[in-house]
Image (cartoon, rainbow, N blue to C red):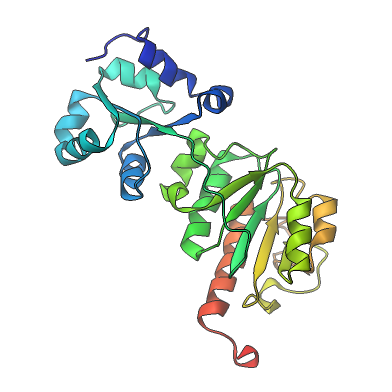
Length: 265
């Protein structure tokens, strides 16, 4: 059992709290039983798993499965587990996994999602979870957004992170240009738009564009949108959370694709 925070493995895992270390090591940290169960369910490779004796006793079958799937399993003391985790009250297990690029297919079959300069990790994690539930083709994230392997993103995604093809892109503009030339509809929200979001034909191949929590979509990308829509709100409300805005548009898209309106039959 590992009992010292000075152990080389423990020190390398603690470094994964920082984005720079995750980039240089090509690894990131999973914390908690649910995330690790989702990694197993999606056959995501596990390099190192650390858990406390109490966790092993409470999750014997899962511990056995981890022993068969992970490259290395290490029992650790409660103090060491607390030191490796980023959460205040970890539930007794963490894992180190490789950062694998799951690049989405460029071809849009139904609906895709482009997100620019999103900063809040909880917001991005919720958006990822919503996108998977709504059945998106993929998510393209600007490089100046929060890192998609941030621990809070992973937790907020409730494990759906493993099921969403996602690409981090330095320049989103050429992507939008290519989709426009291919006939893909590019939909952006705007408080100045005259069209309600439910009036758009989402049965067409569509990419939804979302921007920063405060500033919204940048002007260049806003100009590349082929359709501007509004989300009607009471006068006292200026804007919605980005994940909520995404959910409204994605589920309207899903509704239309599953139950086409008569005038679009």
